[in-house]
Length: 496
Image (cartoon, rainbow, N blue to C red; front, side):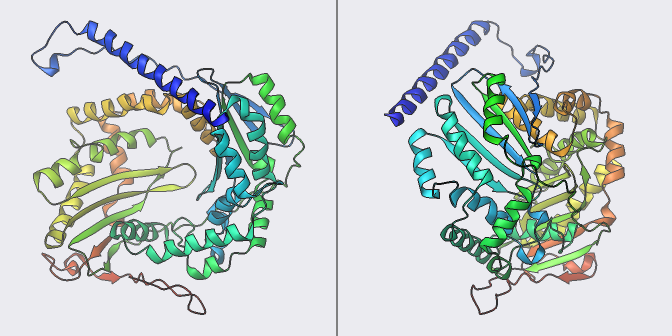
């Protein structure tokens, strides 16, 4: 019966959306009474100022931060959580611990229920609970019908507070990790991006670290329990709730479920290390089963709290934001040197992103394509964007900006991220006006300041023969070995 209720609701919602689309189309058709001969004659109304609602913020006595945003459009409730943890906090010799913890947190059972029992209960209610741990944070997600929220929230709380970490599910997660290691050298582009990060951040940095058979084999259930106990405490958790509820009542509900959770120790996490001094040069990974070369070049980038972040966003759009951007129009369209080509000055929230430019090209045009990419990087610094490039870049950014806040769920997710990383709550609101203020001179200054051709580490993945010119013509070439180390005892097989 409950499954039928969910399906009925979804059909009704789909019908309402379809009816709305038809009505909108009719309204649009009424306005199309004057034809123009040139698309440039079409007049568009000015974009209205952003009116982004802000969530209500509440902090429990145990330190758990709550953001609430009511949305009565549909009888649904969604919970998003950020946990102050991440793979950058796991020991290097146990790389993979955080990822396995994040997976088995959900699959391994919690409270009095097994993982399979939780699956069945959620499926019967059309509900979802997901968990995971990435580089800089853990995440948990809940979505269900309003009427099922109290029961599903209880399961969600058990998963966060009292996971069972079933040994059989740990084994499944470990096996999946092993399979991923065995396949990691199958895709040349995956190799290119992975090893490119290692060149930028340093092979020993958590931001570029890879799991190995030995590190996965070393992860035990006790490790998962200890990792959870250390980082999953209320004063390290940021909880966002959006949907059909009354904020006052929701605070009472959350207090009843999480309020008795003891506060954890106040401890500042160590800063994850990364390579501060660039190691420019030419690097090669030999892969003889390819008919093309995958090329990436990069160095450290910036953080999003950098005042130049907005000018960098415009620069990225000029450089590689669309088919009309410089990389695509010059290297792919005009010169025919790349199947695909991209580049940008990357920015993370609390550690630097990377400036990267990459392309895929025929083996026979490898050196020529590298030169073309270097020329475009040079031009980014030496040739400021034209008025037309600036107009097109800003329009592209601002016209797509609305999709950052076209639902209250997206808004809450953004605000939760800003809260987690300590950014001002109006960061999203100020984005548009900061982009609008960017000038061509700002873009030229940012390119000159943060794009350093002399710092680039250039990596080529592909054949060592058949190139239009030897890589040595660019300088001394260092070969990178990507052989997968086998664990003690010979379990698992390395591969190129």
